[in-house]
Picture (cartoon, one colour):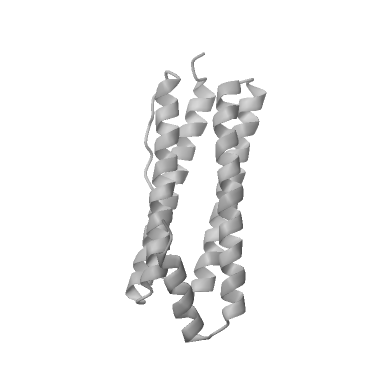
Length: 163
């Protein structure tokens, strides 16, 4: 079955969202590199690559279903950021926004009885559960650390271990 025009358009919008996510996390990585928090920067770079891979998963799916990808402009992410905890709160808010957009895609797939898209989107729904859990865990740990520079450096080392 060929991808419907409405589903193709919605997935193209999601591809843009995923690419913006990658761009946003690279901007955050640049901030952390500027602040000499290379572990935090590494975590964001890995996250940026993961978001790009999500865009490519959608890209491949569109072509597998006989559609075509149409790129839109990617908005410029912020250039200034505050503390690590503020940044991770922004990350969580952004991931919640992405979850909402994927949920809308899923609802469209259900409405159109597009079972193949539902299966693909279930993978993304599960991925979003993991994203939100990881972000919340880091926020909770940063809240426990308070303003301790030593604890922040330990957290920086831990985040540097992300594969």
